[in-house]
Amino acid sequence: MKMKRFYILLSCIILISVMILTSCLKVKDPVPQTIIKVGLVSGLGGFNDAGFNHAILSGLQQIAYDFPMLCQARETLTTADFATNINYFISSSYNLIVTSGYDAAQATVAAAIANPNTDFIILDYYMASPPANLLCAVFDVDQSSFPCGFLAAYWALKQNQVNHIAGFVAGTDIPTIRQFSVSYSHGVAYFDSIYRKNVGVLGYFATSFNDSLQGSRLADSLLKQNISTVFTFAGKTGNGALYKVKEAGKYAIGVDVDQYYSIPAVGPVLLTSCMKGLGNMTYSLLRNFYYNHFPGGTIVHGTLDNGGVGIAPFHNFDSQVPDSIKVALNTVISGIKNGTIKTGWSQ
Image (tube, rainbow, N blue to C red):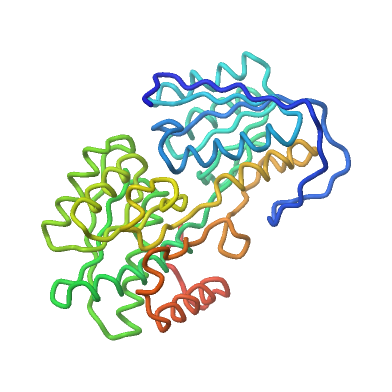
């Protein structure tokens, strides 16, 4: 359902025992705050994207169910909405405001500096020295995109012995998107070096995260060049690419969440998804805030080691991915974790 403004009010008046989370972000602090107010501003595209924004919203919904927090979410459809939505929460005396993404950074940082008594979290954005009341939470997606590139190279070679190219449809050309494309390309190159192959990479950057028709056109351009395997990391634009790949009977890799479940219609063509633990990260950070643990002015990372990033199961393709490739992928993941394999992303 299309919405011009998404507005959710969630509250819970029953305090339950502290949940045990398998996250490195968990802290043990026996002194909870009183009821607090948390405002969530979506990234561009809104909450019905079956991926990035929806996953963050799910973390907010769960924390509001489990703890006595007054939580409200406001949808962002244009860049101007960031400041409008942030200012709404400031004027309503919210204790904590959560935003996400590169496009939200300018408005978030400006608001944090201008309002030192309000705390802020920005997800999926890195800055070297955040203000003391701003916490940056980033996802080291290069660690999960690299093995996706390795898998895509194998699958492209399996599908086409002559024109074996791994494709991608990316969002706008910004650092958090290049983190996917660079490491994906290095994963393909690593496959080539191990198996002495020459699988190539070809992809396109979109101009929007909210244009499914553009995603479809970009995917179609790749498919017309006999590219059978397409990694999409472009929000709703990427969803349009997924549907085009499904229509063509080719293969895709999803992003942010396990899109086999979030977009069941394209599940039959998904090899895997390159995931961020967006919901879990949101929940953990808000839980910590409730227990008076807010490391403002710092940066936390979601990694392969702490489950902040990962790759989804192969689902329908599990029996078609040979054990040798599964073993090789596990070796790649272990190498990334221990630092012996570099993803190619250094920013």
